[in-house]
Length: 280
Image (cartoon, rainbow, N blue to C red):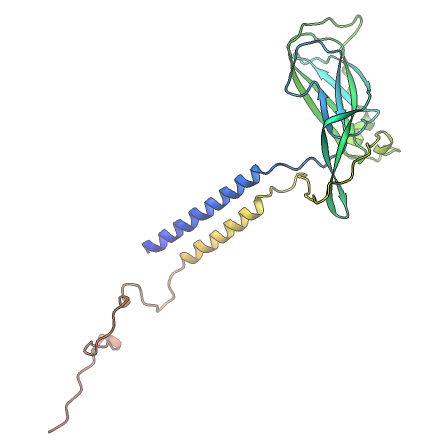
């Protein structure tokens, strides 16, 4: 019984080690790029950086030209907005190309984008030092919503607001919200009419890895298989011996042989009597 418990413990420890190793490997693998198109490629300033001069505009570069009714805001440390409209800018070549995935014949294929299409968001003033957030909402040519934030820390001098300027409070247009939420019933023109797609480079050969698009974690299936196998081993180890099978204590020790003079047990525990000798 003790040896069986030791075996079960060894099996369980191996199962736990296999699951842990699978999880570590899956977490160490790089995540696939986002499958949504028209994503943010870079920005000026970059998210997480420190700005020490009062910029007049922020530049957000996308892999596609933003929709004409895209919505941009800049929020200061006190929660009030300091943006004052936006406009299209001149495209520029990206320092680092961006990868996006397209479905081709049932397989996701990557495409590299080397050009950034900017939205130039005007900053009305810099009221105080602290954390600023630039938010954006647009719709890509494939109908997917493009949204996110660029957060940075401003440590430059404060500037006054323009004369007669008031902080904007407007939100996205209803048409843009409908497209971003996937409701195209109220729009006569698809997203392609409000967003111009950049001409992508040829797909990278030999790469067909699908993007991580909210599916199951890659380690879940192998971990489940390992757990099921471990459970089967544990159940098999805990099974009782079949009825009528002699216990380990009643078995003859390994390596011993029966001698001619040993008594052979009969039913009921009686021993065999010696044979009678013949009459002389």
